[in-house]
Image (cartoon, rainbow, N blue to C red; front, side, top):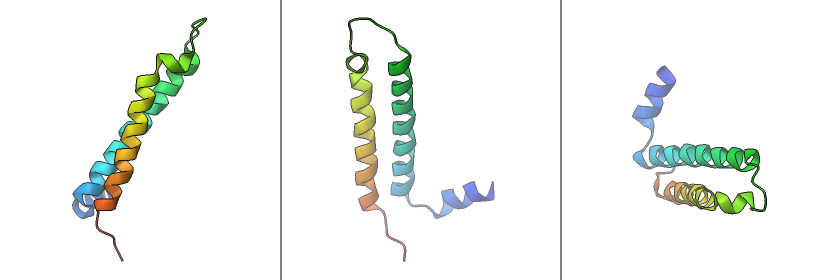
Length: 75
């Protein structure tokens, strides 16, 4: 509990947003990969069926990466 409290108090707003977007992107991409490999549809590429979810997770990862440039650097 102390670790969580310290993270909340000491971490900048940009770092928290970046971490939240990163976790969200990882969860979306893992769900998308799981549904891609468990779906057995004939004559359809499974990647095309989930293409929007892949783009969403890649976009969220890129936004999380860009946000890291705005946080203060610690020495």
